[in-house]
Length: 400
Ligand SMILES: [Zn+2]
Image 1 (cartoon, rainbow, N blue to C red):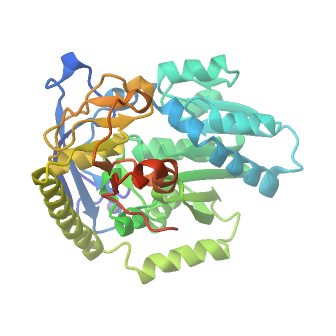
Image 2: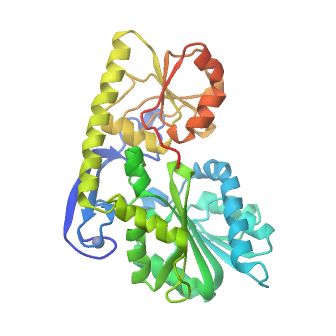
Image 3: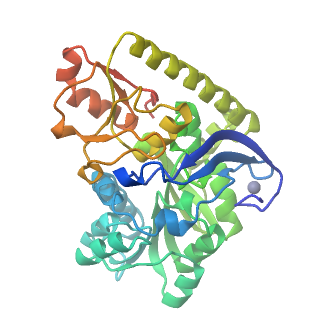
């Protein structure tokens, strides 16, 4: 393959997580054992330094329909509100007839906040069910994949184009980025939110690697992509969402100078060698060591006849369970709040999901897959910790 960003064929395999099922699809009992497996490998581009998957699961399989995300975005609602207030007050406070386009708009949570600020809003969402939910809630939403062709058909430009958490898993990357530039007014602002690879590496959060996430950006690498399509970043900051995300602001090239905090973040990438091949190779060595440590811990607990439940059944947990090879013989069940997962099994390792409020007994150890909610989990479960139940975090994010 060629690099998804710069087309170079000078790629090196850096992380091989083996064959993995599509981690978003928790299985019904009759589906257990029938799920397909795909390679999950990260390659590094020597020319532009972008880390990316070398295998693409068809987007119709990954994004054709899903309902599980709605609840997730609701929990992000506060964050989305903060972003919309910030963007509006900084750039368009006095603007009349302002408009916003949200790519991968999900159930419309982000757009709801812009609507409340007086914007004309439009969402683009590939999932039929989710798009319907948004439309019913009064958020105009097109049920399509976003690309240049769609923008040309719309024939309209927007003050704000927003893309949160979708930018890194878009297959038609160049058509999408061209579309963003075309949809953006001359004075428009493109707000891009993505998982920050630098943080994934520092936190050893390799479970953020899964088939939906085709690209793993640092600032340097996303700027290569934006620049290629006539866009330029002028501001960015780090937010604690998903264990470390970048909220970036871009516009047409030549319109705005990069500000101080963006330059500081760029300098930190240089200081920490964040875009060097050696950093990724070292990341892989640390993941392998983590696997050995975790398996030793679980084996020892088992020998001591301790019972272990998983805490949370997040999508990313499946990358970890499948790569470590942890199944129901070690972890009896995954305890989950999301009731849409009732009675389902984790893809690949087939661990049954149990709904938290329906639990009838407690384990000796919770193995926490939803580690990005560490603070909340420790606070909410103080009573269990006081009873001697251990909460083990395979991934330990440092505070940003
Ligand atoms: Zn490249």
